[in-house]
Every structure is written in structure tokens, then in C-alpha cells.
Length: 372
Image 1 (cartoon, rainbow, N blue to C red):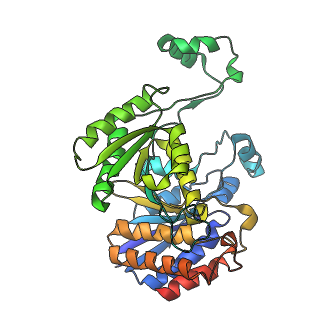
Image 2: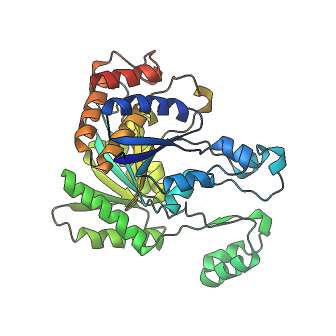
Image 3: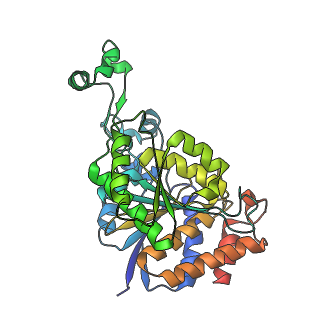
């Protein structure tokens, strides 16, 4: 029996292309593993009314971890229009399957490294090496939303928040509400993960990025928990910044930062800026990590216009495999893979279109596999 059972979920669009590249590299690594394909994505929404079929959830529950490609998501009305005719008028609502999986398996840590590799012509600077910890199950992505706004919800909000009074005369079908939900446990455990990582890899600071001057309760809770956790790590300095200022400072002085930690939506935005500093989403890997299970994915979208062309840069997916290997405890193989990726980038003989080259997704994967 194999040591690892790894689910492969290509998803949509270029997810298929980068997963093909991933398989080439995984086979070269010679892991003691078994790969199990599973269905996820837009076509299953259109044909079955569920982008995350129950059969996929059943598979995930029996495996070590999962590798995921990319997903297509569209607004509610657009999603409903693309359902097969027999599925219309059944009250089906599209929900992002990756968000569902994060909450279902309590994958509360979203880990997003952003590292500049020598020889990449897209680097903002060559000395950037930072990691973003994004709380992955709460915040504005909790899924607690209302439209039209029910009268009983409006009444309760007005009862407990005087600020809601200015909306009292707006018709229910002209107002939508999304709640930002932060729990003490959710805030504390993401802070703990960030500080543990900083200690393990020798980062001197952890920067908590929030907006407590305006979001006094939710961001305030994040800041308080950051301070509480920081007291257990005397060798690491805690920095506190507001999200808007941090975006500016990260662009101005990216080498000042090592580990940054924040809530769900702020982390989503912050990590995309950080990715661009080191070449864009073609270099941006991530892990959705819980206490006992993890799903690893590149952070780019499904890019339907490039699907099947094998044009896109697979580096984000290959670096995602590196994160997966680290999580599995295969750190030697993880280091070798990162070294091979860095070597291909530095050599500059194989480059995809985003780096000014003409090589394909598969060319890039082959070059990395050969170095391995």
C-alpha cells in the first residue's frame, strides 16, 4: 500500500494544463504515493448543479491531501443561466467549491509564500522573500449574507447597531448585507501558525495587517489575539499595520517584511500584490492547511482563453507541489524540487510567454523534471 494517497483535482480551464505539468514532475520525484482523480469545477455545476459532487468529498475523506488546479466562478445570475435546462427552477445556488472545502475540512491556514528567484525578468526586486498567512475560513468569506434583506434580520441589526438606522427605509430588494465574522479561536490559531513559521525559519518579525481604526470589533479582535500570541515569542517582534498603508509600504519596501498575517479578504488582496512583486500569479503557490488535512493550489484562476493551449507558466503549480512535499514531511525532495525550479529560471533557456519566451507549459515542466 502506498504511503500517500493524493487526490488530483484539475478543475477548469488551465487547471488541466498545469495539472499535466504537475504529473510530469511528480513522477520524476518518485514518491511512494497513489494518485486518485476527482471531479470538481464549472462543468459539474452546469451538468449536475453541483461544482463539488458528493463523490469527490467521499474521496477526499480517505486521502492524505489534495492537489488542485484552478476553478471558474461566476456571479449568481450568470451561474444560473449556464445550468442545463433540466436543472432550472430547482433553487440551486452556485458556491465556490474551494471555499466550501476550506470550511468543510477546517483548512484555516492559507499559506502563500512570495519569493523572488534570481534570473526572473519579472521580479520587482531580487531580494523579496516573504510569506503571507491568511485566515481561511472566516471573515467576509464566511458566507453569512442576505439578499433581499429579511425584515427580522434588519430589525435585529438596527436593535444592536445604531449605524444601521440610516438604512431603515431602503426596500429589502435594494439592500444586501454580508457579515464579517471573526472568532477568538480563528484569530488566535492563525496568529499561532504565523509565529511558529517565523520561529522555524528564522524570520525576525511578524506583521499583523488589519484595519482596527475603522473595523473596531473584528480587526480589533485580530490585533488583541496577535498581541497575546506574540507574548510567547519574545525573540520575534510584532508589527501592526493597517491594510491600506501596508499595500503602499509593501510596494515601496518589500524586503522589510518576512511573515505577514491577516484575515480572509485582506489576505486575498495582499497576497495578489505580493505575488506580482515576484513575477505575478504564474509564480504564486498556496496551501490550504488544517490540523489533519490540506489542499494545495496555485493561486491563479482558470484563464479560459488559454485552456488547452499549454501556454501558461506552470511554476506556481510546481512550487505548490513543493509546499505539499514540505507538509508531507518530504523536506529533502521539497528542497530538491525548489532548487530545480530556481535553476531553470536562472538559466533562462526555457521561458513561457509571461517571461518573454515562447516555450510551453510542458517545456517548462520537462526542464524542471530533467534537472531533478
